[in-house]
Image 1: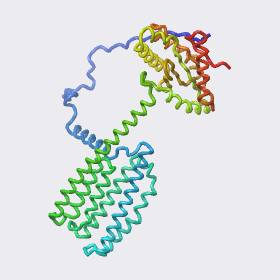
Image 2: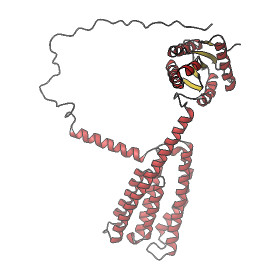
Image 3: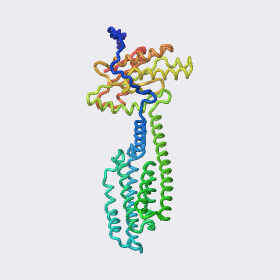
Length: 409
């Protein structure tokens, strides 16, 4: 005998008397001063300008501090990028040191230049001691890269100034820095750092007058920054498309293509979590829902009608449970529901609600449901759990269908 529940109608809504509206005009707080049209002219120009400025700052902040990594693979990529950057910095510092030792230039044997190069060689590997895999998942990652770039830029500009300014070849190290940024930095970051490099070059080396060499360098640096920002934009766009593609593939792999609800694979992946939660006292059940008379719909009305009915069943099952519960299609005309139960919302109440939902949507085609209900036990094997629910469903079907059954003890 199926367990049933008696449906109760909605309680009538009662209402109290409507408050009386006071007679006469209420003019409290009304003045004769015109306040302006609130829809069109009520916002002062200064407020609009401030709002536009805040929006601009928000766009810049989002562009400069967009998330670098959301998963372990992307975090590992950024850790490798830091390692490459440390190696590149070490090579550049050693090259400057060799340049100061063996070239006949203003920087030859300059103590400050040699000391800074040696300091960079010694201290830069300390970056690898930071928790890089965690930092690249939040705002600390972009902050570290920008500070690193600013420090590198400062050192390059200083050694270039020591070596004679615009006549020194050491300013070429700025191009290496921008190239490194373009390999991974967001395009906003490339533009911002490239602009700061160019501005710093003009401020430091052009104070005594911008020479032809300096002007040429600034022009090339600006064009190079633009090209690198374009490369960065293309790289990030490709990354975003790849992330979207992977997300779509995962969704398709976890979703039944006909009904759009989770498939058997997704249900099986979620069951171990429910079994683990049962050890903490959480009560959950698995209901296997098999349609009665579905083959007759396909034979009589065609497969299109059968597909439409399967979609309708998936919809009503989803509406019968909470959003936190799972409704999945196991295959064919068989569905499953993973749901929480309690003393006030028992497994019998849930099963009866599912039975009524299917009976209602399948009434026109004579389709009902046989439902097997198995409560999840802590430590239980998922295969055993599904076997108990299947066995209960076959008991309901053997008893005539349009009912639910619990596993026999």
